[in-house]
Length: 63
Image (cartoon, rainbow, N blue to C red; front, side, top):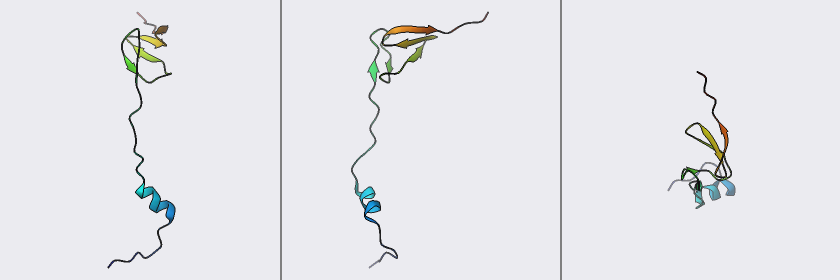
């Protein structure tokens, strides 16, 4: 039977035995555009910056 050369610490043992797993971040659907994005974050769509369903900033175009 195999024997460990050094004692495994309780912290290391418990980290291996944990059942906590990573979860996907919750997404929020914008009421204006219908785009999925992270909550409480602004997002770009078609050259416009949206936050809370309102256009905050438009991307400047140089001709």
